[in-house]
Length: 341
Image (cartoon, rainbow, N blue to C red; front, side, top):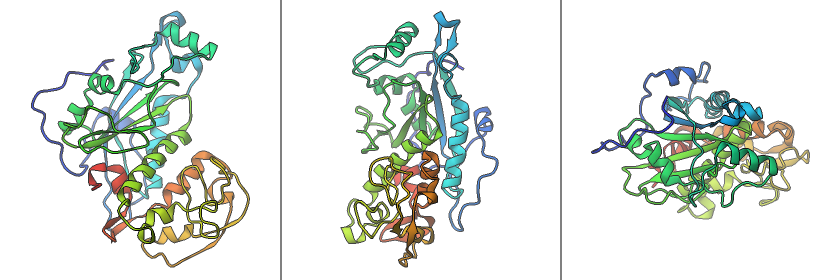
């Protein structure tokens, strides 16, 4: 597999509208889901095609071992495999990512200010806890290096994931292309001529799958905020979904990525304080009948990040139909931002 991407092909065709069928490939077989749940009636599963780029440079002074081996960090392939399976489960069988290509890059990506680590400078900075600042990656250079816009416009991929080392400088998620909007970060500048819009995710293989789900959760928050932005407060169901005890005392629903229904501060997923929550209502969407009961952290894993995020994602509406001009399957927008108007 090459370390750098091929050049863009001239005259790229427009990207097909909604996400389509997956194509078989060696990468797809390696990351295939064996036991995804059946999707709800009337909701056909989607198989977005993903290019995975693993930035895992080999360091000459360390016997040409890669960073993951030198530091004992997580296996990127195992992380991706679990992430794909987790999202298939959390989406009730709707979202079945298809990794159509995997590239292992031997390069340290260039920063926005032109700096690029070498193996020696990265190890020195890591051990001294003095990493290069500013940290931000040069997204334009990365998009060009891996021909992401070209691949998208040739209808080869629907999104891309960078799986990288700490201090690689990526946003957790960002959006590329024409009409791109905030996706937990500003859209990538200079990509407005792309035929559509797509999400570029980034994950840190020092961390575990719970952190990958957190990145995805913030993508959910950004996109659904955009979907519901024109609805008045009393009809904004997304605003209702994310209510928690701190923001709406006595009227908690599911909370958000950082705040469970009973959280008192960021990341407080292990709080045992019981509160009344309407979280069960969302499992019956669009029948929001006002079901309420007392809940605490035992509902979502007792403080485990991955367990909370799976619980939270699993409560997102995921059925057929439409309510107030918005699909009842909110996952459709999260997966394909071209659906967002």
